[in-house]
Amino acid sequence: MTLALRKNRSMIPSVMSDLLDTGRFFTPDVFDLDTDLLNLTSGSVPSVNIIENPSDFKVELAAPGMDRKDFKIEIDNNSLTISGEKKEERKEDKENYRRREFSYNAFNRSFDLPENVIADKIDAKYENGILHLSLPKKEVTVLKPKKEIKIA
Image 1 (tube, rainbow, N blue to C red):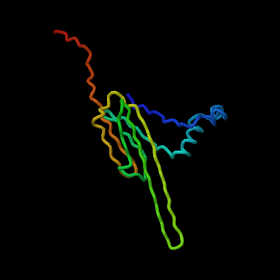
Image 2: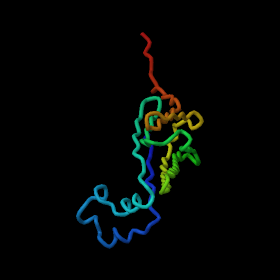
Image 3: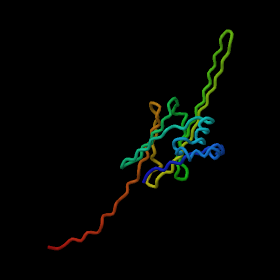
């Protein structure tokens, strides 16, 4: 069973995509105006790698420049949500000028968890710009088929 990814959609209407009907010329993966417009208005969404091993799932989310405190990981109704928010303010006061810069970056990714994940034992760590999650699987006991033993 694999981890299902839910694409977070924009709240902006798809007027541009409907008007230009990009599906005629490009596949949606190559050129999606709704997604491009969303990224311009709210920042980009971090890339995610999902690796399935026999004992667990590994999730790697690329979020360079963030700190551990910037992340929030929640599980609700068998759905894993990873969100992050970073605010920065820089001030520079010199003799004849003043500069103040603000930056804000936020994202939200959601995943439907398979039934065999042990939600209480999910582990997360952040290092070198990558958030690593380990989602352990329940042990599944496989029933062996019935075998008849012949008497010699």
